[in-house]
Length: 166
Image (cartoon, rainbow, N blue to C red; front, top):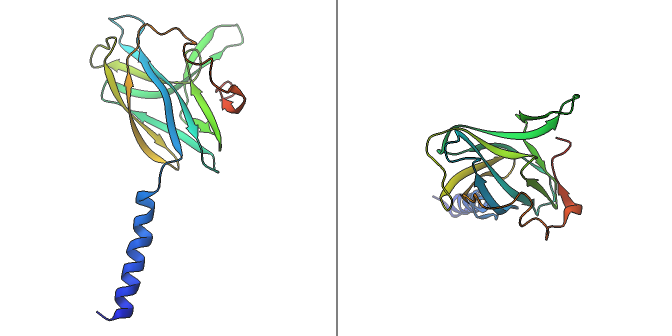
């Protein structure tokens, strides 16, 4: 192999390796999961997703072995005033330089057909799939004692997409 060919191959290898070492601009804060009762066949996970990058991203899927199906859901009020839970197949926008809150009564990760019970203190592995950032696996603790707004008072809601318009 000539020096020129070797140099080109080395440069190509470095260029291809750089994305593998790039730090994700997506981070997850304060995740927790819960069920409404010990015998529940469904549960949900909540968290704050932050995008410190210059480009918006989209949470497009979530996966976990804790249930038969995992979907991205939201709550929406019908014309007759009834709250309805809906699957959001397109997922949730995570704005550039902003946050998106997955919270009770709003957007969330839904576990349907639980394959095991979720007890306080358990940890649920969840893989979040983003359009640009790819897959991020997090450990989500089960917290059956947390109140709906617990831990959210310190958040800057001005840069946060709460999902009301999704």
